[in-house]
Length: 357
Image (cartoon, rainbow, N blue to C red; front, side, top):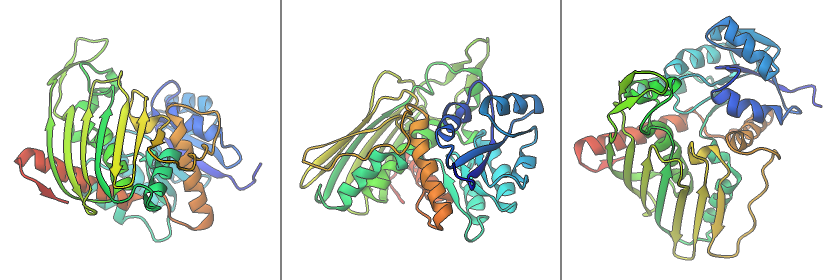
């Protein structure tokens, strides 16, 4: 076992649920030759102590800012609600830490730009668009770069998620408020559009319609009903810089249909599918081609499925960047680009006019 493991501080610990519990910890625990969970924080000391014990960490903090300033932490993993990202990320960067932050980076473009501008030269940061590290997605991009599809012509995507349906559990009530920055558009839409640009290249123009189909949302286990102010259905038609057209449907409240992507070129086509109900980015992605192609490489970490499977790939790449002084993973500048793209989608829908990106 390495004596120079990366010491991770997890901001957003919960002993029984939430993304750190479901995804980060199972991934990191499979990679003990490279990582150690050094510290865990939560909104109270009691919750932090419980999460730290469940995660196998070494220290617990009821104050997240105290964790990020701990000299025993090398890398801060920010896995709290989006409105809390800014304060934690800025403090971690000021403390000289490398930072992994969940997507979306901030509640809006101004917050994203502020955090991106605060990254010191030479620091390593990663934004949590983990599907871009999935073996099938990276392999598909290589096939495209090698010219095996020819000139790209059209991409069709159906991206469902069980979230933003007819009701919501109490801990997801905040996802219904657009002001919090964690919405179907930013989360399901952002993850989807990030992969499309990763494969096809940048959007040049977008047309869009975003719709609130369920305006009143009952909170499970209570009499509370909240107003949904964010879209739960999203249609985006785009023209990319290379001339390829794409058509994307992102829909909430759908847990029984698979994600599907079809990309057609002049020489061949490929399809990708994923069956994880919480969104394609949190499950194994399968790739098929219309032509003979090299097989998809194996996952670097064996024995994982569902939420941790792509995160393990992302954490591996992030560690390699830190160790080798390279910068290959999606970073905060990429998060700013994606935020601007989503703003263009929002404006296209609101105005009814095509937007330049």
